[in-house]
Image 1 (cartoon, rainbow, N blue to C red):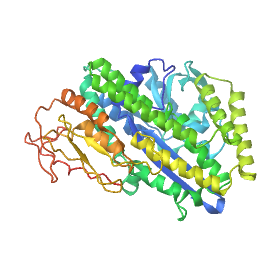
Image 2: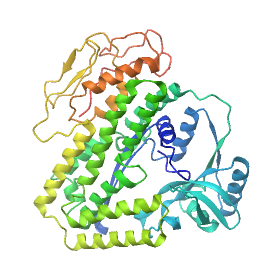
Image 3: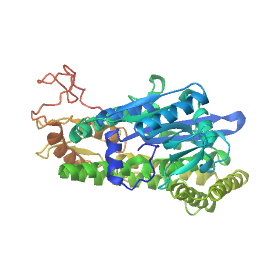
Image 4: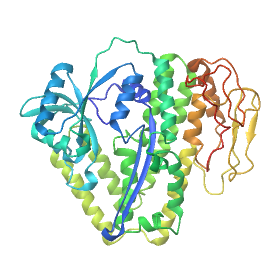
Length: 480
């Protein structure tokens, strides 16, 4: 789940364990529109703490029992000196770069292709460096090109990070709990700036769904991504960022499923394995959502998906630079075709946005439900099979504990964060049962505490995170 990938990702189990311990999945949604320039763009991210690689890596290594060495510089000369020193002492390091400045990527010079990126650096001398960037084979790059890529984004300050050797023992259960805690906090927007917290939380998905179907308003997709070049960019961005922009597909959710699967098998806990199966379905639905943005029955859209897939294969297989550039040339031509004569009329655009919004809501709920088929939803929240059912889908849902069984454990909170924001929750009984089987053996709390409607302190004096005298949350009223 980190953009910096060493040469080869064949150790899928290890990648998944590290990614989950690092915080797993996250969310981020942004739309930018500049009417005078006739330009609009859409961005969606799915990794935990996706907007701050430094915090992500430092917190991850701490949870996994390691520590880091950070080096920054104010000039290219000092940056190259630091790089060679770190490599001599620690063997490898992670370097911050501008993706658009990496020659082997074959990207066109454009603000749309520029962006924060990480690579692994294995060796360097005065003329060349050897890096890892998705491929099994290591990539040789001119030192001047690497330094230029490192210095393109000024606030990154030629940053590089190395791991310090440690003799500490890795505690897998503790790392799992810490990773899930971080994941929940991230999905709730804790990692985002205070003035844009919603964009960094699952609440952004609700706003996105409303904007997709709104017919009025300056921020509606009908206005921002009007048919033509803008809508082409909006739809292709959804597919690209969900499936191909460093996510591994499915907006990182399948990798989260791999993490849960690996943990379940390692700890011998069937609950995690069942949870992984559920989360894998969510990943599949995110992929379906991405492909629904570019319908196969529209030739221009279908060709775009083929080009995205081809370019991704070339990047992972160390394909030729010429072939990569051809991909971007084709995409520019397709964009020009769509701008000149958009392949959908106004009604078809409206229908596509509506279907897209419906799939978006269903994806978060973990169930694909058509319009008018959303039933009242229930949650089994204790081992006795008792349930609390909302009156209708418009009501805010309250999770109550009617049988005395604790219902606010780490993974219950994680469930609320991942599913609770959507208005289209459905049939989560089996999922909650799987969570309950996991919480007790991992967290180790044996006492059952009733979830009240008022804040209260645990009798033990510690909350589930281990903070003394922490207050309990109110019985969850899930925001629509």
